Picture 1 (tube, helix red, strand yellow):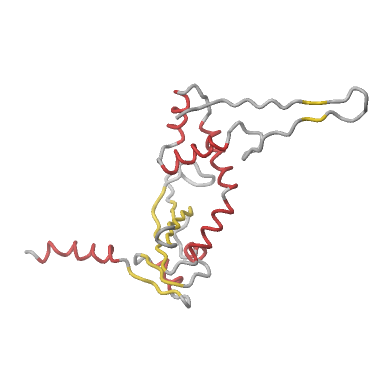
Picture 2 (spheres, helix red, strand yellow):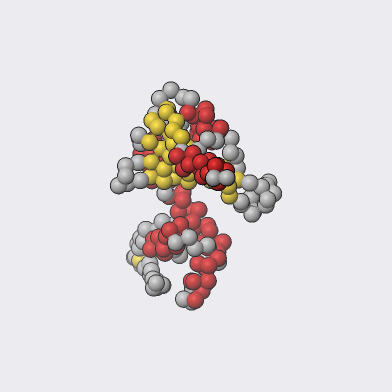
Length: 202
């Protein structure tokens, strides 16, 4: 990893013999306005966090070892702001997902320590949906404080095709919609046979 500080100098020009206002050179395009983060730094930040799974406090220490002092609250703000810029891409990915012949969906518990108006011990849920062509899979994660059936119904609104899930009842309403064929998960079915197998050996 290499970290470089790039200094941009914007010159100001003015005419001594006329009354027009001074002219300042255009600044370089920035993904985040009034930020010192270059696109390459933001790409590294997102890759480190979401591909390599490195928490922001550890990335803060990595930068510190290279002589760059950026607080994790600033890194967190950059991640959020990047997410806002990536929303059009997310919309396209959802469109591609809903075009899939088969969609897999599941939910898993997550715990958020500092969430407004909620206790740190409260359970939240990450809803995962995957589909798309085999060579270009689409995997979407959606956070929710709820595990109710309204969540998958909202996430897959308008979908027509095969829906692969476990036996959780929250998917029943979605599976009952016209054009949606719900499939059972073989891994979950196999688990029951594995659990009963020791009983048959006695």
